[in-house]
Every structure is written in C-alpha cells, then in structure tokens.
Length: 295
Image (cartoon, rainbow, N blue to C red; front, side, top):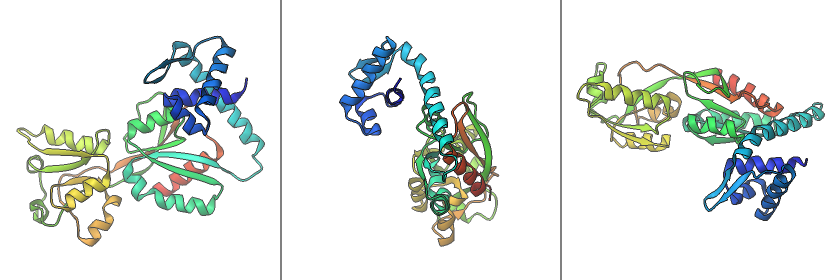
C-alpha cells in the first residue's frame, strides 16, 4: 500500500476538510480526493462521509485511523534508522502556553538554530486542551503544559521546571500602595484581567475569588498575555502572570507587585503522545527544553 494514501487519510481525518488537507499537504484538492477514493477502493470500505460542512470519519474510518498512524510511525522509524549516521534533522512542532512562547522559548529556538541548524523548530501557542488534542492528532510533536499533572491516558508528561507567579497592578492602583498583605476579601471586590479558561493558574485564581462570601470580582478573560498585561498597566485592574512575562514592565515601573496571598509556582510539564514514536530531532529538542526550563 502506498503510504502517501495513509498520510492523506490521517491529515484529512485531523483537518476535517479536503481544502484544509490539500493546503497542509501542498497538494491539489483533486489529488486529495483521488487518494481517499483509491484508499477506500483498496480497503473496500467507506472511510469518510462527505458532508456540506466537511469530511466526517465513518466507523470504519475511526477504526483505521489508529492503525494508519502506527504504520506511518513505523515508516518514520525506518527512515530515521537509515539516517542515523547523519546529522539530526527535521521539523519539530511544539505547543506551548502563550506566556512561555513569548518569554521563555525564543531564546531556546535561537540557541537551537546555532547548535542544531538542521532542526527546524516551530512554536504553536495553545492552552492545555488544544495541546493535548495536537499531540493526539499528530499536529504537535511536543507540548509544554502549565499543569500540576495530566489526566490523559494517551499523553505522558514529565516536570521540567516551575514558573513563579506574581500578582501585579499599575503603580497608581489603590492596592499597589498598601504596606500590608492584601487578603482575599479585598481582592474579591476588584477587577481582574486573566488568561482564557483552561489556563490552570488563572482558573485557580478565579475559583478562589468566587469562593469568597458575597464576592463580586469582575473577571475578564483574554487569550493573550499582552492584552491582559496592557489592561492592567492602564490602571484597569490586576492580573496574575508568570514572573518572566512581566519582568520588563516591573523593571520599567509600568507594573508593580501587589503583596497578596501566596501563589504557588506553577509546574511546567513536557508532554508527548504515549504511543507515538518521538523522532531524533524531537528527542533533541525535548532534551534542550528540559535543560532550558530547568535552569
């Protein structure tokens, strides 16, 4: 069987559309259609239902998907084994929270371009749920999660670092001038600009604020660290962010720390798919991530 057909099949299963699959594979849409039709004829089953909204896997298609991924995984191992004597090379896609993409990973990518020029690293900003789905679908090779643990049978993770959190506000904010620790009752009456749902430390803070009796916090969620940080710098409220994302603003005096409750450091976990093989290039990047984030 031509493994190109299996590649097209897995990409179409993940993207859910012939146009999207063709764009990712750099093929004409008609070629994707021919690949799928040929595979269906070879196997004697219908793999997709063609719907106005896209391509939906049939029961037979869902059963084939895991086996197809195993075959492609084995092919990748064979190719890597044949090239073992050469330089480590290849494309590695890392999913990571936006806060790490913006603050911690650019330096790593720059260092890898010097030490491993044949390894092409791509960063994809995403929350935990999207990172897990990316690992499952094969769109991501590795993922960084800001979580205490992962509760996914098909995803394995290991701690590689910890990110200190800081509660910050603009210098003119009333709580910024307090010479004592601000308690939960006071915080529960404030406006907060937090990262979107799915961000573990933002969700934990929101839950704690809402547990305060008669709490009336105003919680605004953003998908961007920059958006939350800029709203707070404008004096509109407070935010809780990894210290590395506000270091420059604290240095310049645009933001100041608010002495509040203790917020535990958030663990950084390096995750990968439990069953899928990790290519040499991804293994090299994983080792570099562990070193970089553990410093």
